[in-house]
Length: 305
Image: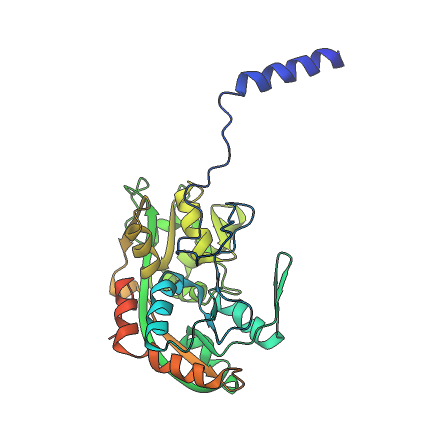
């Protein structure tokens, strides 16, 4: 009997062989342009670290960006280096702001087998986050603004028209975990504006329990990938994130959220009191509020007032 079971299993595997496909990585990051190197070695799904940028050895400037600004990094750093050619070795991280704050407080972060102990010269995040840690900064500056939108699959097959539709049982939602993503708490505020506390509870409690709401760990990466690989149907995101995926021709669409249900974000840069490269920190702070940097942020869907 066991022999027949083995033969049967082999037969099924052979029969399905034509249907089995390799894992799909066509939409995987990095979506930025990697720096040039003698050995270009990125393996999708295996060795791929899209939220660490530039020179990790002996950097002349270290910037921790709230992760949803990752699309701006290439242009920002190129423009900054052009204006300040004395700074060519720059390292940047674009992880969730809560994770970056923990890294600042704890002094290190480990990603897979890599431990990073670099201290930032500049930290950027939403105003609510920087307001929680004023003792770390010698200077703060607002420099960009954002609002919420809903990212959906191309053609919007679930016909999502607004935040209330995210409460539907047939809509799979990708949602940032409020534990470490500042946007998470802001989206919860928007749910209440759109449908009272009942909508928030439906999406954030009931649908989490039945797995039709997925709480992300790194929203600006996981959410687009979940939409692109048909794991989620809709996701509340910052407008710039939905705009960027369409900008790079990924098969997604954007659903606007009316102002009365929307939440606005103010991005604030903080120069660290103990910045290892104090002059570079000052120069980068000045650059972030310059017309050049503001034009880059507008290019990627942010506003700068």
